Image (cartoon, rainbow, N blue to C red):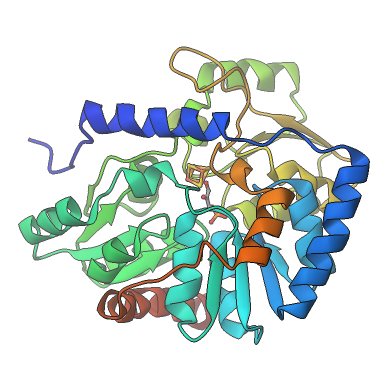
Length: 355
Ligand code: 13P
Ligand code: SF4
């Protein structure tokens, strides 16, 4: 009998329905003039409100550039959390998904944290409701609870540790070496990858990312044969057979660094396509090709786009700045408990991985 916990079909369907709804809520593309005007207005609003824009690599290029041009930041989910902690602006505006806004608020409770779009969900977060997760933990009292950053504040409050994709492997290796048995949630693919690499004793929640689970190993293998000199870069939220074909497996920042540092001209990339903007800046002149993801059950034909990340745009940013709506508020008891497990992650990262 498997100790792992599966996701009911009805919830999987609800998650897919929410993703489709998000796709339909995307604003039409702006003309160049509209975009320039909006950029001017949002820059001025950011300044007058002493606000910083903290963006993930998956959001549109104009938001990433705006963040950097106005003293904000673009990074992976761990770096976003750290930047919010160290920055002294009064307001943090998160261009990303809800768990990223919650993490910023948990670490910086004195700051006002606003989301560009509050309905920017994450399928992993949706797959792991707090009450059911608590029951799962109660069933395994002997296990150290490690949760992926892509979870709600409530789930993080129950955890001993939080981990992002940049740190999961090192953290589980460390805990396992100390003889700890692990309860991991919610990403089954990242969990299985870490389990395989570390041989740790782990039980896994069976959530998944709707973008990364669509990458297809057979089609990737065929593409590799076509491009024998290309290196394959894979985010660990992808299925095991896709990870098995990778030259580098890592977080978004680790993927960008690999594109810059590896001695290759062409890369096949299995992660959300918003990352191409920063990869092209980090490694100009190199060629980046999206890994194949079409097939039965895929969200769309080779799109590799997170529908929730793509809700972040300039019109919604201006609306947030003008109205002050979309503030992240978290119950103080939950926040304090979640802060413990997130702070342990941040400290583990600087203490044990400074190399
Ligand atoms: P990173 O921590 O690698 O930025 O990943 C966040 C995420 O949501 C990937 O889908
Ligand atoms: Fe969540 Fe996947 Fe979107 Fe990342 S890409 S935010 S894991 S749904």
